[in-house]
Length: 210
Image 1 (spheres, rainbow, N blue to C red):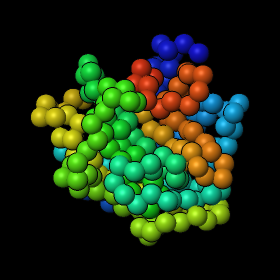
Image 2: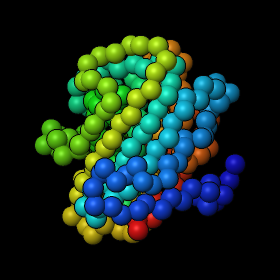
Image 3: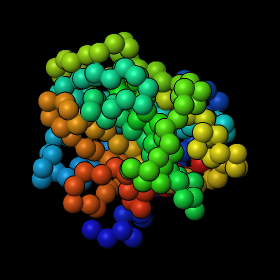
C-alpha cells in the first residue's frame, strides 16, 4: 500500500455552521478501514460527522458495537482500553500533533505530541474547554451489544496555539477498544504499519474547512 495513494483517498470537506445542533444536517462518513484485520478483524459500525463555526471544531460519533464498556472516569486515563472514539489532528507543517480520545461515557484524554511516547498531556484547564456529550451516563459500564453517540466541541485554539486557523488540517478519526470483549482498531484514513499504531501522522488525511 503506497503512502501517496493513501493521501489522495482521504479528503473531507468540513462545512461551517452556527451551532452544534445543525450537525445532523450534514452527511456522515464511516470508519471503514480495519488496518490490522488479520489479527483484529472485528469491525463495529461507526459513523461520524464533522463541522466548524470558525472558532470550534464539532465532531459527532455514532457507534454500534458488541461490548459497550467503560472503566476509566479520570481525565487522561487509559480511555483507549474502553469503547473509545478518537480524533488526531495536526496543522500542516507543524512538528506537533494532538490527540483527543474519549470513551463512551465521556471521559477524555488529550495531549500535544511529537510521538506516541513524547507528549505533554492537557491540564484540567484545557480539558475543561473540550465539551463532551455522551448518550450514556457518566459512570462505569460493561454491557453487551449496544449503541452510543458522542459529541465533541474542540476549540481551534487548543491545537492551533495562537496561530490563524488554516483552511486545511491533517487529521484522522479512530475507534478502538483494547480491552473490550473483541479488541478492535478502526480508522478513517488507512494506516500501513505491521501492528496497531494510531500515532502515525504521516497517514493522516485532509480536512478542508469551508
